[in-house]
Length: 392
Image (cartoon, rainbow, N blue to C red; front, side, top):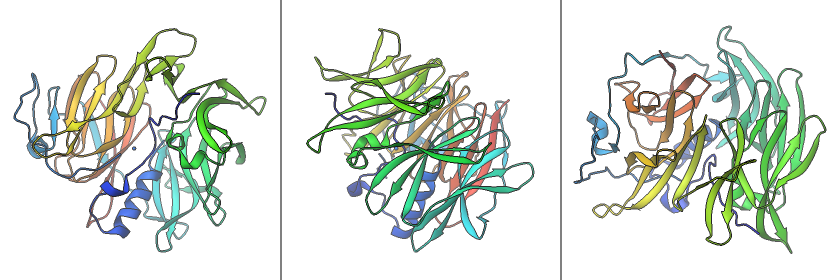
């Protein structure tokens, strides 16, 4: 059977490479960024390269951190951005924005610090009225991760902390109904498959689970849940990490003859082969983008990370600081950074980079809607700042 291969996961950080920060702040930062969206961090040295890249430019503070293989432009004429005021507390609990539901609604997770953050409930915040409505609460000893959202559904994993068992659940915010879709295998939470993506469309949910023999993990299969029949069925053996490419279901498989992983689009024979050093994969339209970890920089002995366009087979950006949470929509490609930086984004149509805010140095996280996004700027010693942006 195929091997378990994690791509597109929500968040994973090797303990031995964790950022050197106060542990309480770090735990809170990890939790809040886990709440933000449905990836392997951390090298803190600056990037210095003697080699020049054709057509590349650097930008002020970022020239020692990113190397751009596309032009860098002043972006004032390409986007609009304005501060977004969100409540720091709701229902007497601290709040964190987790996903974009629509142009006027955000998914919020409420938590208490006991002493580390513990998620207590999820709800919907209306940007127009400023009102918050509780969707559901969590039982004691359980935690959740938001996997994906649709026009009316929130799909999330719920983990029983004591037993480390995981279930896939669905909440319909139109009807207020919540139900369990699937109970994962007992070994699931201990594998990299736990971090694989879950997608929904055409009245179905696609996800993967590990295959075990005599309590040993021997593979992973792609599954399908049908909302109409309320049944789970095997969609494809030895496949995992579903995604949409040009509105068609795709997934990652392994060539058993070469041991190389590739993306297969359902109903098509063409294969998109993947490099071994891909850590994240995201899609939008017919485009695929990846975060890759490259060989260590010979001078600093630190891992160099890159963002690639798989369709163009080109590197767009290099970074010596870890980046993750790769995301894309029709207009932009975004990622999360782990040292304070200016919020840089890639403009897809213009094929260039720009910075959203000149005066923000922060740990930047993005939540994207179809044509706009929310920028979350977290700081070490000041409150988190929120912004809403869209391309003009």
